[in-house]
Length: 255
Ligand code: NDP
Image (cartoon, rainbow, N blue to C red; front, side, top):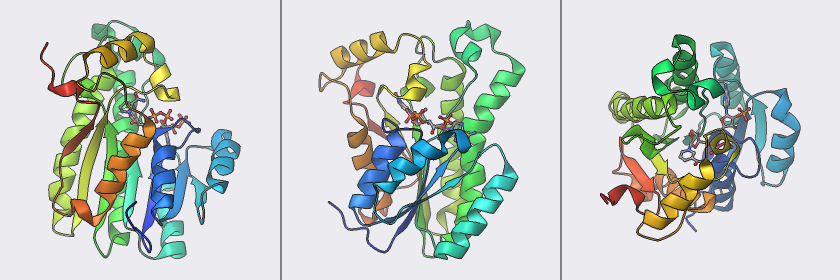
């Protein structure tokens, strides 16, 4: 395990124990990071706080990323607690259910806006708030999916949002690079989480993925977390603006 002692990591997107963000928080804690974990609202407070209680030195705070005021308040609190932060994990996505289930051509203006606000713009807003606290450089990462590049049934507006998210990673990498802040995405294979269960016929997706992927199986949250720790560490000091695939190799297949 890498040693990240002395680093402060801020993680957004822990909903429950299956969340990719929870696996990342666990591995960062095992590596010695001090952790601050953002959860969306009071509905998630009890679950989030009970999970976080199991991680040494972790603190959790509410932050709905659709609110500029909540982001500002959260980072003011982070500044007064820690002064400097080193790692930001953005593991957040949302689209209204009809936008996922309807025929893509029926995508509504409001559904498109919400999906992009929560799943894409929030990365820009969090990066802008985090950058002044990353005085010694930093690593920012987000979670994406191959539906950004190829069409997957039922992924719909979320595929368009993930394409925008990956472009956002590249633009942020340039915007923040001279401050030695790196920005990357991890493209995870399908994993049964709360968010993924919103996508229709996840079972078929998991079976098809395991059949076709070079490794002949699906990936687990802990494997995504392994890549996250690498991106958080100095081992990836020359890597920015990239999409790293943790998908058992699925994306290299043509047929
Ligand atoms: P989870 O449902 O566990 O995590 C999604 C998180 O986003 C939840 O914590 C959710 O909170 C949070 N969120 C949604 N809206 C807001 C908001 N307004 N403010 C703050 N937080 C919000 O699922 P995953 O762990 O699967 O998803 C994490 C990321 O990984 C997403 O970006 C997803 O697209 C991506 N990903 C997932 C894959 C998979 O197959 N599972 C594959 C590839 C990428 P709440 O529960 O309150 O809505």
